[in-house]
Structures are given as C-alpha cells and as structure tokens.
Length: 531
Image (tube, rainbow, N blue to C red; front, side, top):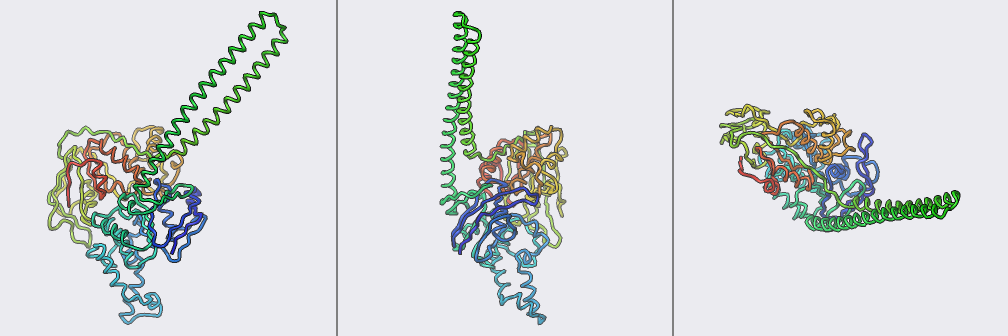
C-alpha cells in the first residue's frame, strides 16, 4: 500500500502561501524522513497527509487512513486519553452493551471490537504507561506521557501507515529506546518529521522539503549531511571563482574606459594642433563618444550578466538558518546561593503528591551549569515552576535570592500571544531597544521581514521557540539564571547547533531539562541532578 502526495499546496487563512507543488510517493513498508527549515510547513504537510487539514491544491492518495502522532497536544488537554485516541465512544458502547442497556447504535459503534479494553491495556504496558487508564485526563499528563499515549495507538489500531511529528521531543531515554525498537522492527510504512539524529539515521530515505517542492535522497541522514556538505563546498568554491572573475572583469572594464578617454583626449589635442575645422572636430568628438558609449554598454551588459550569474550562485548555495544569541553575562558573584529547596513535595488535585517518598532538597549556585534529568512524569517541569515561583510547594520550602533575575523558557512557550503579530509580540516585551535593533534581532533568528506581520498562531513550533527567545532577550539586563525546559524541541538541527554554541559561552547559571544527550554534551554541564 503506497502513500501518494501529488502537487499539494497550502495557504494560510490570511491568504499567505506556505508551500506548493509538494509531490512524492512512499511505497508500502518504506520508511523515510521529511526534513526542512523551521516554518517550511512539515507539520502542516503531515496533517494534510493524515486527512486532518485541507490542502489548497493537489491530492493525497492512500488505501487507508494514516495514523498521526502529533507534535503538539494542547488541543487534547480537555479530553481523556480515550477521547484523544478516538475510542471513547467504543468503550461507552461496550459498557452499555455489557450493562444490558445496549442499542443497535452501540453495537454498530463497537463493531465487534470486544477486545478494545485489553488492547488498550496491552498498549499502555508496551509503552511503559504504568497506571494509565482510558479515563485519565490528558491535561494531567506530562509531554512524554502524552506522546506515549499516542504511540500506544500504534498498537491499538495497527495502522498500515504511521506519520510521526517530532515523536522524540518529550520522550525520556526509555521512551526513545522503545520508539527506536518499534521503528527498526515494524514492517509498516513510516514517515517521520524529526530533529533527532538517531531516529533520522534509522531512515533509509530523506526528503528535503522547501517552499516549492521536495528533493529526494535515498540515504540515511548522516550520508545526506555528508552529501549536502560536499555540494555546498563545491557551490562555495564556484561562488568564490565567480566573485574573482567579476572583480577581474570590472577592473578590465575600468582600464578599457580609461584607455578610451586618454585616446579621445589625445585625438582632440592633435586635431587642435593641425587646425582641424571646428565642425570636423565636433564630428570626431561625437564619433569618439559614440564609440565609448558602445564600449561602455557592452561592458556593462557583460558585467550585469556576470552579476546575475553570481547572484544565482549565491541563491543556489544552501544558507543554513542562523540563530545567534547575544545573552550577555550577569554580574552575580560566583558561587552565590541562588535557589534552594528543602523537603519539597507538590500535589496536583486528584493525584498523589510528587516526591512524597523522597522530598526534594536541592541547591543552585551562581555560575553553575546543571542538567536536570529524570523519567517522564517524575516532575521536572513542575520543579521548574516551583523554582521560578509559578507554583508553591504542597510541603517544604523554596528560597530564592531577592535580587535573582530568572529567564524561563517553558515547553509551551506560554509567553507567546497567538493574537499578536511577530513584531508586536516582540515589541510588547521590549525595554529601550530602538525599532531597527528589534528587527535585526528577528533577522538573526531567521524571522525575516516577510514574517513580521504574521500572526503568532500561524508560527511553527520552531519559530515560536525562536520568537520566545527573542522576547526574553530584549530585556536590558542579562539574566542571572536561564532555565530551559526541552529547548531543542521543534527546532531544526542547524539552529540546535548554534543554540548549543551560544549557551556554551553564557557565564550565568544554566539549568537545562533535556533528553537530548548530544545537546547536553555540546553545551557543557558541570553537575547533574536526577529526580
């Protein structure tokens, strides 16, 4: 069973086109990855392929409905796990039938799936969702648990085609291992959008997505990266040669014009000495100027053609998205106690308190670089909210330095207002920076002028992350502490590399929650706190 995408295009509700002419075919049992820059429309494309979003043009053909594991789960927070997976009505119908209250409609809904509860229980166990039930509210689950709930759907429904949008974003080490195992062993068709280099390298084919189409690479990601690097090196060399040729041509044209001017001047002087008639001298001057004009026109046409060729070469060269942070460095004295928790627990309504058996007591000092790690559901994001004062502990104490300036970037980028445009969102957080500096900052984050009037609701996950960082960085003073909860979620690999390099140079206190071991290694960590 193949999955065919033919000439697909998508236009935002505000009439702004996102992509067009997307065509490719995934054969039965084939596994492939779709990569591309943040904001290019990868998630939208998967949603179209799953039949959840309408396209502006083109078509998607598949013998069965693909199963989508989404990147974002906010729209499911008001649902139960059963409702999110689309089995709530089947479970209600079976309950009514077994209770002797079943109707013909209930039997139709159930469709002889008497084992639906057993399949759900087996799927939850398969993905280590201990204590999970169909009635569990999605809003009470952490990001990794929500991802695992949708991964469990693979076992419940046994779809022929699985579409996965950044499936490793929130998964802990165990969850990632389970996902890698599934992908390597399954004989189903799998299409993945991801920045996880381990997962990408498991895919035997790569589709590089741009605004105008797809480019196919029948190879793993590492081989693709080597190929692209080699292509870019060759393009850079050709660009350098064209630049040298243009410079030589410009110098040659300048010398030719100078020779023509000298020749014309010498001719006028000789004519004057020989007492050539004024009318004749005028004719000679006109002919000379016409000749110079023709020469200049020819040279300018040649230079224009060379410049056009140079611009084409520059456009052809892959320019990786640039994301550079200028965080600055705080003035906080070294080794000063910034935050301390003592015997802390926290309980959400209707749930057993976190860390009840082993209350948390931790200390964070200025200049430290700390990795906060733990399995999905252990309370890492909750602890961050306690450290920042967004939540108060159920028991125990949290003490913070009175002058502490914390910058926190949560997983949901909650500081982003979907009703605002990109520029007005940044302007709302601006202190004293002039307009041109704000626009320069956006450009440095690959949020170009074309996106400044775009509503934040239309931003991709990666673009939201970049804008959130811009908002946090327009403050006048460098933060004493940066807390980042899964900062690499949703961003493309090149941006991730630059983010790591920038955080590596930050001298303030850094507290990072991440399941990406490569990123943790890249930023440099002094201490690990496990909960």
